[in-house]
Length: 570
Image (cartoon, helix red, strand yellow):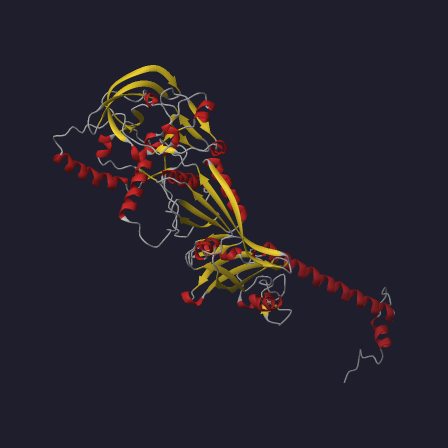
């Protein structure tokens, strides 16, 4: 065996490998060089790794394989489930268990429902009619939930329940940011309990004996024309809104209120629209001696002056002199917050306030039920004009027996030959009046003309294109009115409608509404008029050309709410 080149020790090997010009290194220097080489090798590897990453970002993203997707998943910090990376580093289940975005939103609530009028309470005191599973009901229910303003409402739908279960369920979907750039969505159900509660309007109707104050409006006259006018004034100003019940009485109406202040306010309203005198009384119901409190009921009596439009009045001599020396026989031309009168012989006028009238009261000699019909033969204007009236001497004939009379009247501006006029016949009438008996017989005219009549147009069975509304009232008794009483009521109502047609100033104070059934009624009336014309073809039925018509511009559209609640009136 050849052992050439084999050295027993490292020193021998180094000595044999030494050549001329080489530098000999110590062991410490050798270790330092090895460490430097290792550091350079590590830096080269890091540079190669960074260069590989830069190439990946610069190049188009390759299609991720299943292995790459598995490498991009992270572990949930709570349960350790592999999930895609997110700012919270948590899975959806852990986030839902950790954060409840429905906190602060009640899962059960109560909604109040009036079974009589089928309306829901919208706090604080508004009652709204809503159908089941309607948009209106959803809006009302969501407004009752506290805490919805702190989250974002994504969806809200009804969950079906039995109609008799008194439960309404709504499924809500909400979103809220729980961590940085982390939005959580959650679905939950809110249950509403439908609790029964009467609204104020139904309470006023159901409880007849809960009134605290009442206003008894009375007028001692044999007809209802003034109350018909007062009813329209009340409706126009909505003065009946605070009443809990309205009852018809023999000579007027009774208004019941839950508070005394409402009754006082209603009395002030009456004083502003009609001449009225009020009196107050108090009835003690109960008292508590320990707390020094008492429960009382208050009644207010409102008496209207017993004078109506077109009534014949005989003034006291003293009163006539205080009005500028006018005649004692006058006519009432208007009833508002004051009483307006006119002397048909001189066109002198005057007004009486409620206080002036009750200091020296007087009554009417005759009302419109005592009017007689006349036809005009001749008209001689005197030339005196005051306001809308003109003084004239008119020759008229009584329609019943063709007796001819001369009368001085204030209707010279509208009367012409051939017209029909209504007036009071004083030739053979007896009045139970001391003031009338003291008048000299020569100073009393035979006829006092009151207003022009339109018999031909009235006889034509014309249908009015307008109508009036009425207040819902309770009858004085459950018995139906007798036939004679009902005929009088219908006659008073027809007279009131005619007054509205003939007096623009009177109808300007109330509301007239369009009649939606006017066309059908007019067609039926036209058929009846045609049949009547065939029967009366030999009679002269030319209608009056100056018949007063109510213009369509004066009519209001009748707004009918889809609500049969107690606040609605007929």
